[in-house]
Length: 315
Image (cartoon, rainbow, N blue to C red):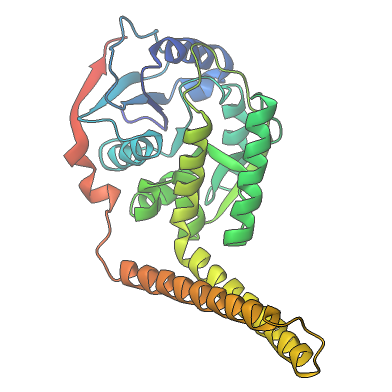
């Protein structure tokens, strides 16, 4: 029996939290939805295995085992590609294994998806449960992302993807680096529902400062072509401003209001900075243009290279 919905959960050494999450899904997701829903867990080559998997009251559980650890985003890309090819369904629900994506919010996402069945629906985070330091740096990341890309990102992986958009998104190479960023880059229609982030069910979060920086860079890298052009424009504007300052300095020297040696030192320093910034920006733009001519990794056609086996968990 083909499921109407599939819940996709990537996980790495989070079996305890996963079992608690499955129990919450059984309790919080409406019975009509749960009855036609399957569960796919992408095991990102965990260093220890589960002792048990909690009973799932839906249609069944499959575990996609990967040959090597690829990271959260690539595990999602592989899971989506597997579902798109092997499990015909109406919708895919993507969520984390730690419980910070609350199962009760699946109902709200599904309701929004039914109203706009052609769009990907994300959970827009209105409140987070992390420490003050994490929230502070996360706000800095969002600010930098907006300045570099001109776009606002208010959501993560928690989402509902309709079948038509699933077939689109697994052919977007950018989801290999970052799933939300790939959706933005693909220009596929999407919307969001305001939802608070829940607390982790068990274990310690693997997201530290370094992980946050890497996550931010991977999201920005998806939109690197936009970033490169914006940096080039900024470099040109700064160059114009620097040249204006040089003109002012030379004028002051000409009317003998500048200290000896000061004008030439400042002018030469500004000129060197202008040339360096402009050449670096131009080099970045040409690197991006060269990258766009290369053949890219397409998850839909190449995901099988990373899948070791598929396990069907008896329920």
